[in-house]
Image 1 (spheres, one colour):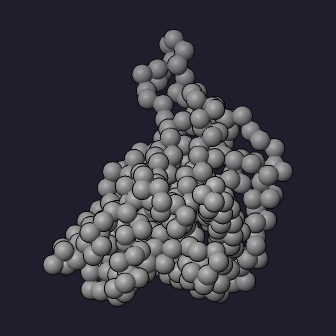
Image 2 (tube, rainbow, N blue to C red):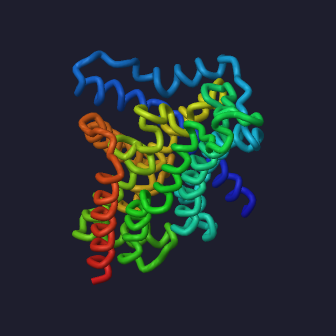
Image 3 (cartoon, one colour):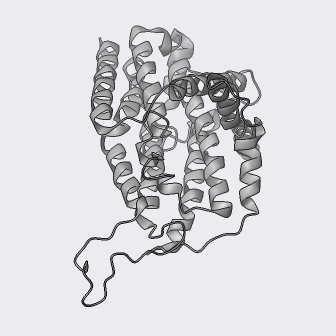
Length: 332
């Protein structure tokens, strides 16, 4: 009997992941077709183009040999990101609530940090420029610039990624811990149970402020305009993704859409008390919340330039203070 329950839980969680992944492949297309294209008064791509057709196209592209001090790890980083996002979604399912080490805010924050660290490593481990090694300045004896420092485009992105990990995503983590002030627990099962008994945390003053902070953190961690400093096309082109080609770039595309949906599910769990249950209307609410966040992000990014550090720091500081206020009001 006990084994049947475990098997049922595993199958249900697996189906939830599969359904969410399939839906997530449409989110990038919805953002570009129905938001960016409409705002910019153009037709835009097919809905299935960015999240489905583009990855399929990249799967059949020729792979390239990238210069890297640790090529195995460099190639594995997109796969690691996808696995981390998958684990994050599994941790949000009710089936995982029986595993406290997985279904807690500490585990959620840890998984999000691993996803962020991957960007730093992507930039730091690539030593190519468009897949060609560029040993410049010349290092031979007698060269005019033999004492100059060499750097690659991804090095800029790596340093920016490290900066964003240090303080950029801090508002998001404040928003994640804000619901604890109501449930007095870091475990998702307790957070969900409290909201199902007393109403969604979102509909409190503390919850409304924390939701604003979450949304800004949501855009930051997705590296979306105006917070996309790690891949600003004016100087670092595609940032840490630049040298990924073929199937590795396909995984990058799939992971982004999947991550967008998973963050929407995370908001549903923490602010509405609605975990992803594939056998009920819950999963539809989770998808709807993810769509609302995508639409809001698309509208904001369509009208936003890339923030410079002078603009980014005050924004993050102000959002951090809002997060602290939300937690303080929740405690009171």
